[in-house]
Length: 374
Image (cartoon, rainbow, N blue to C red; front, side, top):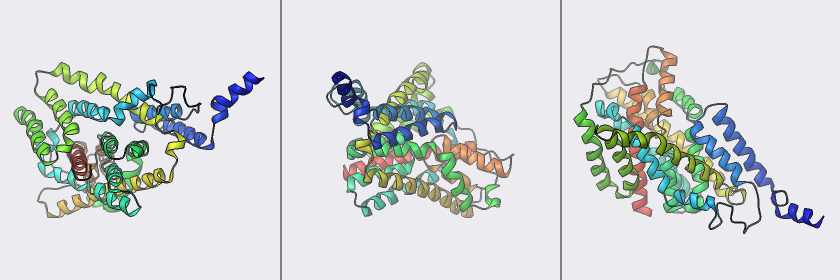
């Protein structure tokens, strides 16, 4: 009986709290969204299961927890806290990305820039709620709807908030199909949603090769703090476009990025131990994150309406919502909204232009915040 009692007291049952129960429910909910609803399953399934892993209580000193030195999880988590995983994911993302849609219609880059307004407005909102400049900068980047960038910046500026910021960023990325359509519908008319845009012109191979090199040099000089992200993004794109490293590009966009995504999702989820995660600051971050994402979507749509009003070429304001960095889900939402009004309207390639521009914009924004407050 003494052995049994000791086992119960030192095991999971003896250390279980209401907070652990709440987080286990959240983890199961993430798994449900990823598996049953198909909301970003490549992100939500690893994160959801990681939340389950991180909220099985145990006695400190067993060297199994993510916050215990020399545990397996703690070693894997260094890829998050040291910013390795975000950079490596950007490498794979660059090897997947086709910038042709943006290069064929450069004016759409402005929509990617406009959607980053959510970052800086949320930064101000976080300051008003009592967060310091560094914490507010890390929270504000959630508005870009870019999980790797949010993790990278919070690991440098607010590591104590990393778990809440990462889960918040990825949650809103996964819920793009739920959050964005009502905002788009609210800010646009039926007539505007039915606008058909002119087909994009083809882009030469030479321009596709030169763009990532030139873009890296420009963004690197503007925001050196973004080099760890944009350097990997544009390098991956060079591998894809140059035509002589297809083997490397194929590895980067398949097995390599899949492995990093698994490790990132699992360790981010495991970092949400209830005793560290369920705090008033976490609640504020989730509220600010939702507000930030809504503002970013609205900013893109409203700026697209302005561009449409002054432009000679037709521009559907729906694609402004794709200015956030949730690639390619935001572009898919734009296609869905346009096709719902007119099944013959194809917006996906037009929407991809501000979508990939938003990836660059959020990384530049993170670099500026890091240089200013880091």
